Image (cartoon, rainbow over all chains, first blue to last red; front, side, top):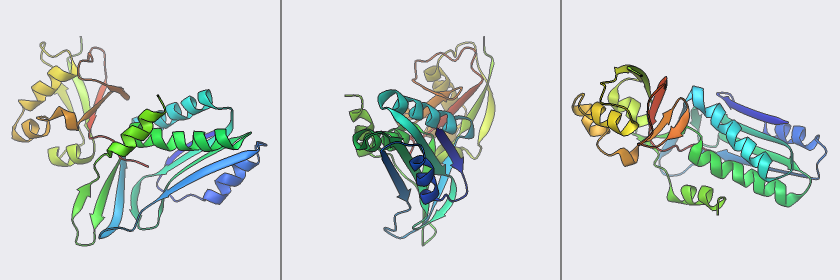
Length: 147
Length: 87
């Protein structure tokens, strides 16, 4: 089972984890990214490239299934405007053992951050808008899987 | 030989250009992404500013990441955008 979704609406992380749990593996790992309440941030705007984003996520999922024995995985990424504390992204993996599940889940996030066409814009409480810059630590994390 | 190319823009590239897509007619001298960027720089002040530092930009041809030396021939859509920041 591979589920990929790019959507405006919120998601139920518990429900998605339950679906993975039903696949019969011995390990389910998941990650939820949410809007961090730092600085004078009021909201985030997430933009994407409809023709390419889901395709890029499917390719990442395919790579993960080639690296680990996976019963199922889910990637849900929201787009549009989100407030502090809102969920942005979910990755989840079901495998037979914890190492594969945790590693694959981490791999999905590291790759997603560097190759999936999403862009974040910060909207501050004073109305100032700023596009988020890429982070070297994200590039390094994605690169580490190739070493 | 490609003579017309649809270009789509995202994030601050889209905002600064004030458009999310356009059809660009390719001169015969333009065969690679790099040559297209040079051509775009000649289209006006905003273009020359945005495309001055290609290190700040990423390119996807028909929805696949490509480098500046990649050939445009046969392509339908080029996307130009800043490094991705999802997750």
